[in-house]
Length: 204
Image 1 (cartoon, rainbow, N blue to C red):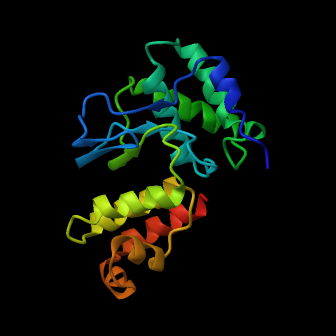
Image 2 (cartoon, rainbow, N blue to C red; image 1 turned 135 degrees about the vertical axis):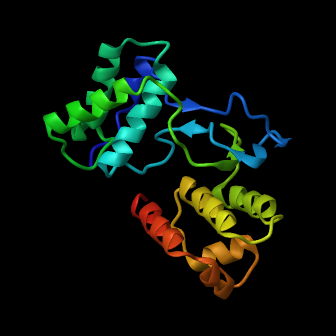
């Protein structure tokens, strides 16, 4: 499997990470920012070893890249970046893409005008170079999210945090982190959550 050639983006000063710029954290420490109501402004592409596995995900990555870089690069340069990422040999995607399909995806992205792409809500954002281990991060996540009454959203947010750390999501792990029984997790796992759990785990 090809190594992701992230240095190519860095050399061209392509922005692929952005912390919230309008939403203020409820709690801010040297290790993390906590947003009680959540934030949709957290864009951190290529933050884990997971690669792009679907056309839908590829288009979303393109939308984010265009949104983050529209003030810094012209459309022709964006097309070059998009084609580089879509080339399986460069390590960002897991599949080969026909040129016509790629042209249609890029065209759709350019026509959308650079509006903020739909994003998953995040409540906890660990700061770069926090030096916390994955276990330490998960302990903090459990403490902060655990303050709330168990809900489908709470389970989903915990699933996102586990996935972001590069670990496999299991019912037992969710129960341990959320301080409840596996039976309680099973009782609150909807078909949508089960499907999302499978999708997230497949990316690891």
